[in-house]
Image (cartoon, rainbow over all chains, first blue to last red; front, side):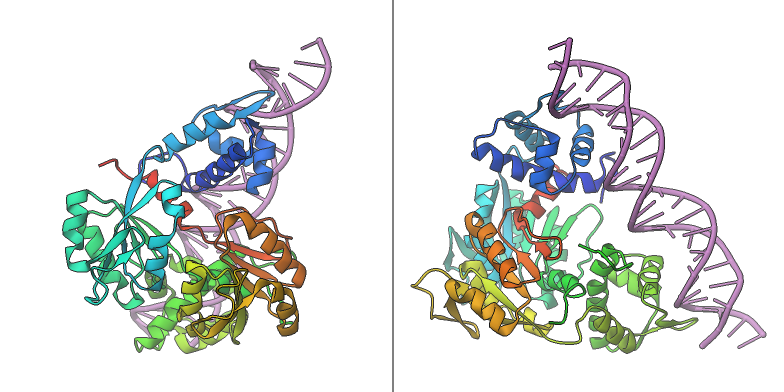
Length: 209
Length: 209
DNA sequence: TAGATTGTTAATCGATTAACAATC
DNA sequence: TAGATTGTTAATCGATTAACAATC
């Protein structure tokens, strides 16, 4: 997953949540924040935040902390978030349609550009701001528009087939909602969302009434 | 989060995915599996699987591997998954409704028992197999039915307030879809799902065309 | 028996935390 | 200046991996 870079994967994975909290604090009117205060809001430790940021340079001032505006700007640049990314959704079932209408993507820099499905009955219908396209046109649209990001919301049984086609067409990041372990090349970023799996992780700790 | 137990949290968090793969293999007709083969399917290493399982005892046979049926049974018992758990959903927007209709919960042992919302226009309407109830009745239903698990799909602005009310009413596990960092007592299991955050984690690795 | 594979111990690796000199 | 807080180094902690005797 992480070949050349010297920054650990786990550090990268924490930066977006720092950014989210910083944006929230900016909206609340803060201008400056110490690693201690930021850590409390994020739910981590001051040392970890300073360590994580130090992989990319020194963004703070001793005695004062960090300029929130400046840190947001820097983190966005580091994470390639200083631009809008287009994403496509494959599978226009309940979940795919709910995601297509979800405003949170556009609000945070991800544009849902297209939505694909195989069912001729829904191909052509409007969901949110996009029209459902037939999945047979998926590869050509990916290549024509140079899409790099795809969200998979098809049934588990066909998720791997779709993933193969996406990778073949040039997709570099996949957010998979199907409850299966997808196999993709190491060069492709794979993130999984399975609410059932996440709930199952908590059951061990629950008291049986 | 993990007070008394000697089993690391991270081990517990991997067991449900082992179980998922074992169930898949059972459906494909396998009866026995080695740690090596299971590891390949799960996407981990044989050593890690054997180490993880060894926290709970010896489930395999040298030279043969593991009986899939037996291992499934044992893991389900360990994870408190040898029963059906009821969960409630708070927030009947697009996402809450999509989750209420999602068959994957029931198929894997989670029953969506109730769905709450504050909007009088949708209270009383049927979504999947449940009727939307007013959120004012949430606490009393939690206590009456002894619900332990809740899914939060309300807007970010009210997610913390809802979380507080859920915890106060006795909920022990929360699956949060709102894009905010919730503060809950250490005794409450919190899992977050934020698709935007997960996609942002991948942008760092994408090549800009 | 010979081959395969477990469960476990020891070695390695990597991540987190603590501490503090530097400095705003 | 005195107090606060950074960036970084070293110490600690915990998780993963490797190795292998035990044994099916």
